[in-house]
Image (tube, rainbow, N blue to C red; front, side, top):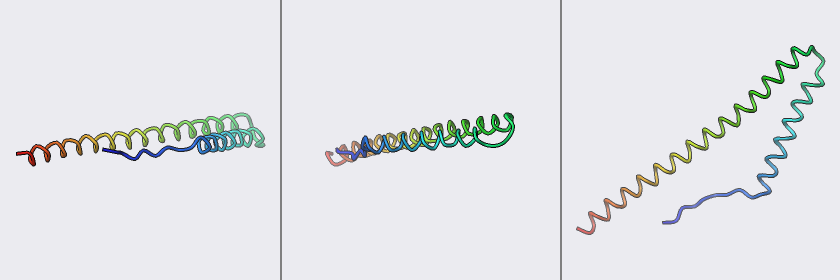
Length: 90
């Protein structure tokens, strides 16, 4: 039984990391250059870092759920095929 597994290219991963770094550094630079008190800048920096870490956590949870669903589906399909094979052989 063959399962199609999609994989991204190295260029795609590189582009994703480069764009993430540019966006992250740009966000921090924008906060740093903002005219305001250090308390406001600190709050915005903490909120920004928390948002980024939450995005990583959410992406991991979604990926884990997707992988779990794939595994459950494969197990269920294997059980069904086994039952059908046993029924057909009788």
